[in-house]
Image (cartoon, rainbow, N blue to C red; front, side, top):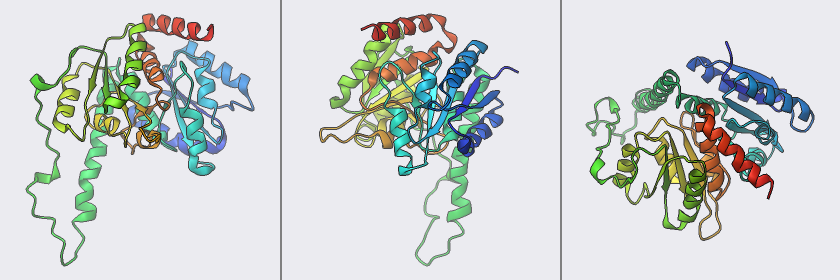
Length: 340
């Protein structure tokens, strides 16, 4: 059984985070491999593991590390496959590791998940593989339903037993608290290319320049895309209509500042991979934490602040898992950058 995913730990002390990932992969029945190698103490071992793993058919790498967490970046240096980074909380609440992983230079993206979120890393890896493996995609969809049902059951298990004189939980007529599907108006979705492989959603006009950077790189990689400026807060119905209309999209890229509601909104509406580009607003505040720190079951593959180019490269790496043509275009793109 050839593994599809390789998990690499920077230290044996990170095993608890890896176990979160392995629990998910076992449940999804996706074969994987586990290795320990340090980017700083055993760099040659990292290179050998990654290069041999790539040649053997590994489709996605997961790097788990804390402190000056350069392991995911080191992995990315030796493979064209997508790399997912999991920052570990060792010091400074894990923020040192998060910034080490997420702030990668173009064109070397790391699909970063939340601090200690090994479970979300595994789900994200499965979403990548599910783009060309229907059975894996089906299992991811079922897993997400389980997470949703857990929330719904919490009303019965936690809320209903509460006995207080002024609490009233029976005034709503929602059968079994099931979430109804929002109405979908395809005619007013606003999409221009409903068959695009990648849908780019920009939350505010001020973030459009970052969205255009995404589109420029996707053009170079010959990946079809559609771009839409719509806010899930100001125009909720239009937002839902657009996401639902892009049912043929394999990847969604959300570009947003101000609480990064775009990516959080998209990930609730699709089981496809969602890439997040946190932007700075007019006050200079950035929104990397509100983009990357997603709860279990709904990961967002977050790239660096304002780094739309890396979001596009990451989309290319994901689609290239079963598309050799994109691999060649990525090689040319990266070689051109190196030779400048």
